[in-house]
Image (cartoon, rainbow, N blue to C red; front, side, top):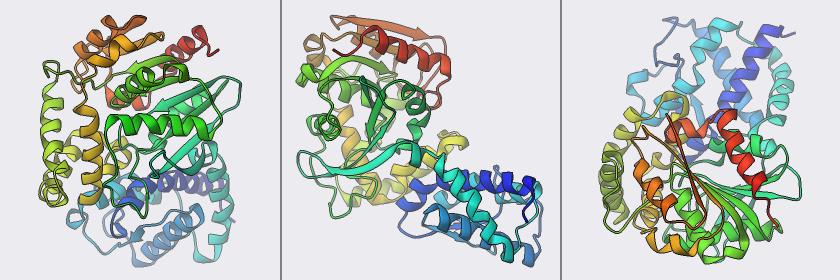
Length: 402
C-alpha cells in the first residue's frame, strides 16, 4: 500500500503532467523526458537502472490515466541533447525531485496510483472549466470553456495563442458568483482539418467572442481582455455594443497608427512575428531563433504554457498570423464608439506593453477609468493575486449586466 508521503508526491506529479498537456500535445513528436530537477540538473547523479525503470512506468501510468499524450520517458538521454521544448517539459516534471520526496512505486502497486490520479483530475482545470468544441461563424473549430453559475456572465479573452489553463486563477476567482466563459485562439489547439489559412483579422477574432456567447445562450456579458485580448474586447464592444455591458482591459498591447507607444519588446516582437507570418517557409526559418529568444525571456514556472504557440514552425506560423492581426490594428477608431463603462489597468513598470498605450485608451473612452498599479506585467497577470482579481470582480458588480 502506498504511504501518505508517496500519495502526496504522486498527486503533485499528476498535477505537473496535466500542466504540460498543451505543450506536449502541440509538438510534432512525443517529448523525451529525462529525470532532472527544475533547474535542469540531474540530482542525484546516476539513478539505478531498476529505479529508473520503475519511475518510467509510473510516469507512463500517470500520463495514461490522466489522458495526457506525447510524453516519452528517455532516461538514457542527456538533458543538454534534448530539444528546447523537451527540456521545458523535463524541468517542469522535475522527476529527480520526485525521487527525493518519495519511494519509487513498485510495478505491482501501480494500480493504487489510479485513485490518486482520478482525485487530482476531478479537481483540475480540465474538470472545473467545461470544454466544448464549436464552430465559429466562418466554420473554424473553437475550444470554448465555461465555469461557474449565476445570472450574470463574464467573458475572459486571454492573450493570443495562450492555453485556456493559463487563465485558471482568473476563472476560478470570477466564477465564485457568476458564469465565466472563455475560448482558445482560432486555428490552434487541435483545430484538425484546417490548414491555418482562415481569417485572422481582428473582426474574425472578435466574432469568436460572439460565437462563445451564443453557444452558451448569453445575450450580454462583461468582457475582460488580457494583453492582446484587450484589443479584441475593444473591437467587439465597438461592433456589437448591445452584447457588452462593460469592459475591463488589463495590460493591453494596443496598436496606434503612429506606432509611437511601443516598448522595445513590442517593437522587436512585432517585427519578428511579421516575418514569420509571411509564409510557412519564413516561419520555419525564424522558428529556432524565436524559440531561443522566448525561452530565455520566459520564467520557468510558466514556460510550459506560455511557449505553446512556438512548439512547432506550423504553430508559430498560425500564431503569428493571428497576433499580427491584433498588433496591426489601430485601436484609435474604436475608442469613440465604445461608451460602455471601461476599467483600463496597467502598471508603471510594464516593459512588455507600453503603459502610455493604456493611458491613451482610457483618456479617449467616454466612460474610461484608468488604474495604474505600481508593479506588474503580462507574466505576473496570469497568476494575479486575489487583491487584483477583486478589482475586476468589484468593477463587474458595480456595472452589473442588465
